[in-house]
Image 1 (cartoon, rainbow, N blue to C red):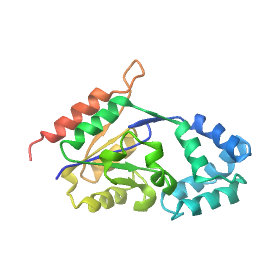
Image 2: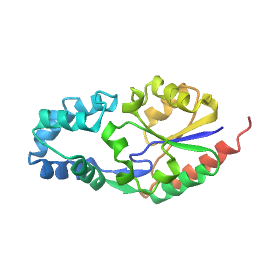
Image 3: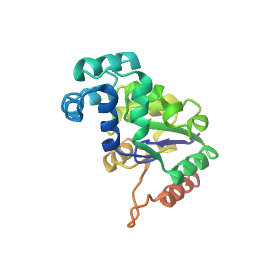
Length: 210
């Protein structure tokens, strides 16, 4: 069985934190500076991404305690979705990969992101079939070696039978060091995403010599 792992932000969906932060501030009734200087600069989001908070409720309670912004999950989703734009060529490539093997997310994100995928990523949830691996569940962030080995273990596959598509070169290098195939997702000179390169890499992986 071949497994095609896809990063989410800036790989399947364009992501702009500068769109998210103002919306969070508006919904939470605190300043953008307070949010950025407490939650993000304080390392709380990174801690959430490695599983510090086991549930969305725990995450939101901690977010309120640290920042003073009390959000519902629906409000958190509102702000997150405001920062995300589907990359249509990448979405189509994932659907193509699903005809060739198993597709899964492999994303550095906290539990509320996983819980919110039907709202945030309606274009891909059906094809993923609950293969929604996030770092908070796996207890490690890319590019740590253990996130790759744990992801592979979830599917019972050898590293050589899996490929990662990611916009981060560090994450791509980490996957390769773990023995996986990997494709660095980049932009073209005109600023558009190189989704043709992604699709070519999918087919090359599917057609590789065993």
